[in-house]
Image (cartoon, rainbow, N blue to C red; front, side, top):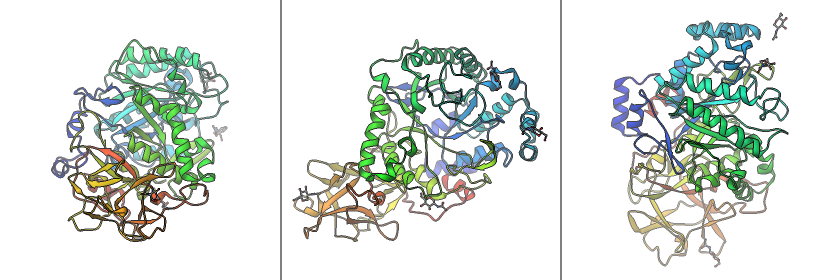
Length: 562
Ligand SMILES: *[C@@H]1O[C@H](CO)[C@@H](O)[C@H](O)[C@H]1NC(C)=O
Ligand SMILES: *[C@@H]1O[C@H](CO)[C@@H](O)[C@H](O)[C@H]1NC(C)=O
Ligand SMILES: *[C@@H]1O[C@H](CO)[C@@H](O)[C@H](O)[C@H]1NC(C)=O
Ligand SMILES: *[C@@H]1O[C@H](CO)[C@@H](O)[C@H](O)[C@H]1NC(C)=O
């Protein structure tokens, strides 16, 4: 879907989701660089990457889904769902290996006997069928550009196939299909090909380095070479360097910096899934798991933020069917971290299905934002909660409001919302309409930023919290962040009946207190509804509060997001 001028004007008038200047510039070149840990535009203003992954690196080497819908419709939906960018994957051999470089889309599918998807491509994207693969790839990039979407080209594997294992020959420099010279040649070709394409803003050098050959010395040797090659061919692109051990590990950089001939154009990326820690989430107390695993992600990657590097969370995501306890506990914790640090990120993943993955045709992708038909969101609830992270909370040049604290509820992606009147009860609503708080940890006071004498008060178990006046003397208005995760916001019950924690009421929207749940030790209980993160924000406050909505169809989403 393209922005029609009337819809676009309505969107501007609403004043929502507006990085307007950036958006208007997208039709022209967007040039990103870095300013300490932030990614910024030419004016030095923050550009938050809110991307979704879209694979184009499996055997057919065509962006998934084009047998089911026209490329422009998919790109339009990506924009309508609020993403501003796509991490588009590609395999080295598509541009370096004579067995693949001359293939057309039709030949690539015929070679794999993918007759049905090829017929689908003919029906939905007839213009692509007889293009060479690289030209079809360009057409996808260009369609994303027409929808104001930035693109990060991600070198995902060498040989086109599903990624990854330690022994698939694509894991590290020197593996069977991973010759450094071929890789640098591929990066150079892609950087050159897309140097003049306005919406290609970055290139990530290699996805998930891994396997028995991996070592830090070779990492420096080759990643620096790859970075220089990309920069030489396309000085405009942001160069993104991934770590070892499936992009879970950048710890080695703490003792030895990367050496590059250029400045302000490099960032790092990290991946973080629940299964990065096996079943730790499901088999531990969630507060303890969140603290332990969060600290470990910090030690391995996010510490680089404090050293003045952007760290792009380029893969994270969950089974969108909602039945995976490991994923669900992880998501609340990871989303709290992503909001707190206001990370740049790319969700895994867009695709509802694959033409062919690991030998299976039309494989369903349960992590996908879209369902198998590529027409509707797989799970509107799961999509909504990631939408809370799409806009910047803070950063250079991003100050729609004076700094405040938003009470963010990661498991729903909602915030304690601005009340329509001083006496109306507190409810969860869109973070676009968050209530502005000021938290004083020493005095344990959670007050309205603009009315410091008015502060949050517990009223008892199961009862809605209120904003009241007697802040100084009132035990029930003293709040601490408790448990290892510090995600429980707790007050003492006046009856001496223990601690009460902020929670979501049975109606799914009111903000209440309940007895604090599984603060420690208990492995079987899920505290996520009591997880709130105090997020520093300069986002506009007082926008029309958009409260919890019923599940949406994509068609509605398009209108609502504008
Ligand atoms: C080209 O691709 C084939 C098939 O995937 C592979 O076996 C071969 O090693 C590749 N050649 C080079 C030079 O990368
Ligand atoms: C495609 O089908 C032909 C004929 O049935 C068969 O010989 C060939 O092995 C198949 N190729 C693949 C990649 O499945
Ligand atoms: C959608 O996701 C939510 C949140 O994880 C989950 O509770 C719900 O069961 C999911 N619904 C469907 C239909 O998959
Ligand atoms: C609750 O009371 C206990 C004991 O008086 C005290 O140690 C604790 O800090 C209080 N908790 C809160 C949240 O105020």
